[in-house]
Amino acid sequence: MAMLITSQNLHTSIKLLVGVLMFYAAYCLLLFLMQRSLIYPRGFIGNVGKPDLESSGIQQIWLDTQYGRIETWYLPPVGIQPADVAVPTVIFAHGNAELIDYNVDEMLPFRQMGMGVLLVEYPGYGRSGGSPSQKSITVGFVAAYDMLLTRKIADPQKIILYGRSLGGGAVCALAARRPCAGLILMSAFTSIRSFAIRYGAPGFLVLDPFDNLPVVKNYKHPILILHGRYDNVIPYRHGLKLHRVAPRSHMITYDCAHNDCPPDWGSHYKSIADYLVRIGVMAPASR
Image (cartoon, rainbow, N blue to C red):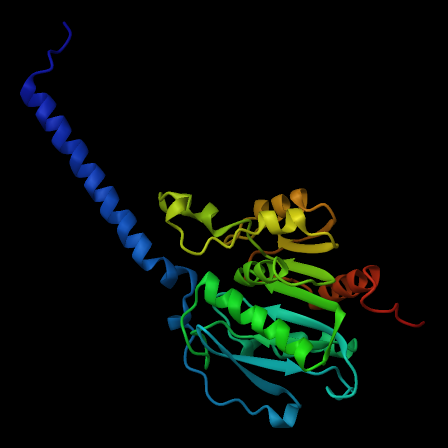
């Protein structure tokens, strides 16, 4: 016999459904309110002191933006003074749990190639003012790019944007607003919205989507995409999808996860040097 649905059973079912929906709504609201703490975990990075930059020849350049005062470090090429000539320049954007302080040694191979490097801090990170968001980060990077041209220390035809992890979103946002000769994306995502499903939340709740797909799809110059096959933070499929939609991209797959990428720094920089020669930013090394 079929069970008869009584008015009491129906009322109980409706109450249960309403309770589940209310719980889910509260859960989504909590995620909505906490999302920037998850995307930008600056509170776990630790305090930074006053850097000793004078001995290393690094220029500390502060930029005033509508979202706060942003710190940048200009690392001149080895053997070339910044005022001498406008040089090929890399604008680098780090991951969400890093600071520009951590990237100086890592950028040395660029400087040895005769390139300048500009490290741009995110608002609210390190000594920079303001709070991080897609808008404030984008404004900061645009201001940093414009500063390079105003000071005439970067060759405007040979500016490379290089972003790692969250930094991939920062440099894609910049590439959509300013011209650049090349784009390097390491362990980058397609969009932060794609991660909402991990938490069982709808993507439209994401405040800072950093939607990289349309940027790489419309980018006219060659893109170098680097990704770890076993990346457990930003899955490998993100790199594959970026590579698929970009009309002029070259992808290198590393046998590594997220935080140990790249596994071989020497091979990593050789691949980047080859890319820079291929796109005409650097001359082939003399033999």
